[in-house]
Length: 313
Picture (spheres, rainbow, N blue to C red):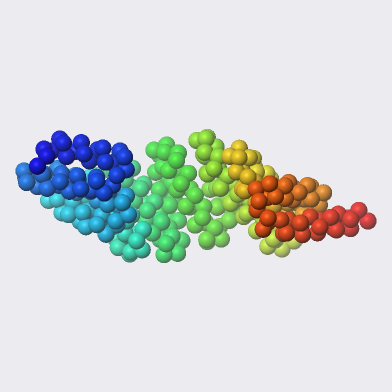
């Protein structure tokens, strides 16, 4: 039997190459070795790593079984930090396999321990995952409470990437509860964060969401004055999104955004600009062979030309 150092070397090499089946075999050997020499703490650590590797290998049930064994050891050793992490990870896996109530129970237990041991980082993660579990259950009012707390912790820790992700979850929950202005506020902050982080793709996704919100508000507006107000905001937001798409050299996204922008320009009575914008989209989709988009664009160009003629009379 290989010694512990050799087993752990095999684990490290397998994980580095993302050879999860081989890593699982080596970690099982590490668990057996630690058990044979009576090292309960090492056995628990290896079981936890084995659980995470099963999870990466898309074996959630095996991961949960390993976490259960690791949890027994952590509690016997009175290792509350490890217990905290195991419960939280179990909660996340349970949520992903659709066992939402079990997930909430485990995450709440992890949250109580995080509070007791002042694990601020863990508290933020478990709150965010609790919010996602309530999202899955469509209980958005409860999800908002948890996401807001997780956002506060990300701000406290100056964790910009997690702040952006948590603000996004919060923004979508606000949309579900018709709190549109709060949602837009969240997404604008997310865009600013991703621009700072140099992540134009994520910034583009959120800016496109903002544009879609304004466009929808324009379509539902009770008056022409209010509709115009929202359409102008949508036009500007689509313009910003277009800039991100061009930075990414994403031709399909550029064509889709131009199509949306042309529609908004048409709704604003800016028919000449709409025709030009639709024409740009037509060129893009023609050049990449996406001919299924062309019929709609051609119809919109003809409609805008007709409305432009009426406008000149």
